[in-house]
Length: 188
Length: 188
DNA sequence: GGAAAATGAGTGATTGCTCGCTCTTTAATG
DNA sequence: CATTAAAGAGCGAGCAATCACTCATTTTCC
Image 1 (cartoon, protein in one colour):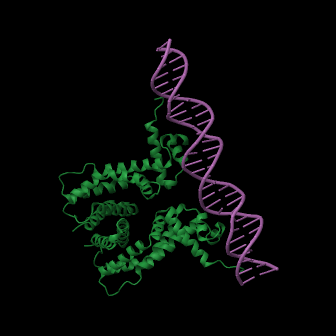
Image 2 (cartoon, rainbow over the protein chains, first blue to last red):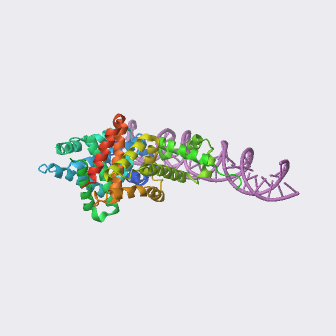
Image 3 (cartoon, protein in one colour):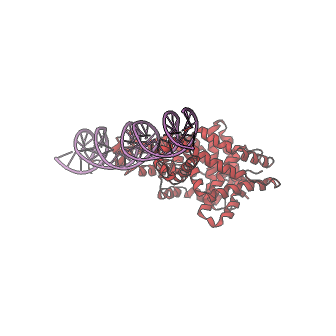
């Protein structure tokens, strides 16, 4: 083994992919991604066998980061509703604080270049998150499936983020309205 | 003057675009769209100045059809909640009955090739729908903006349709759950 | 010294769109 | 009504641009 692949270069390529996918969608050319990462185009294909693999890695990188941000430091002593609100706030705050990453993730989510395997893999990152939800909602919403609740939470978060993007001065207000709406939606 | 453009051909091109955009996304080649419509590729550009114009026309065609399906035949005598449920059912049933059109519309909605002007134009189709919503919800949800409520309705409809697509045998069940969730979300 | 990383010009495939041409429709003319 | 000229719909091969990916060559590290 004469010369090892560099973890730094791999990270640089991923970071570049995030920015360019956010700006141009999954059609962002590999040449530009490589350029911005400071490597030659051929080098990119030493680290990822093809573009789809690069997109999948980018997708999983972002999903992993988001999933970790969600469940980190959830206070144990709080009432279920407040624990869920804590997660909700994490989701909104991370997304609002990382608009580029959010944009890239949205693009990848709706892209047909992310295969079902990658999606399942990404889903798995959110197992902890779903478990927390499930536990906290034991009495509040037992009639709705956890998948449905997760989908509702995600959708309402997207709406909330759109409103925050249009009216950033009232971040906290929109965040609270969004949570209350979610809580009502899954209640009774 | 000399030879009129044919409305039939234009419709054929639009119909072809709907099917191919549903199947391949906005990347569907103009050559294929023309082929399937039974015209030469050059002819397509006699009817639409470029591909973006074709996509915009396709988008507005679908939005218009959906908007019309929503507000048609809303019974006047019903209670507000039941009137909204009627609209909800129209939305779910039209989408479930027209999976190809729905798929194409989804692709176009998230595409960056539909400009803000087309989007505003499409939005205008739903003015009647929003007015109906606004009127019916006068007492039920006055604290939330009508735009927020519309977004919540759309998002919950998307989720409901995903569940129906996975489990078509319980169409009515998922439809009812979806509506109840929406009603709770915007309530109090 | 040698193996593997790094390079970037090159390649073949694909795409949106053009352009010179043919054929159909319409309107004008006697 | 018959003839003809003008307009422009219809055509599809071809063009220029773009893309993902390759490969002969150079550089770098063990």
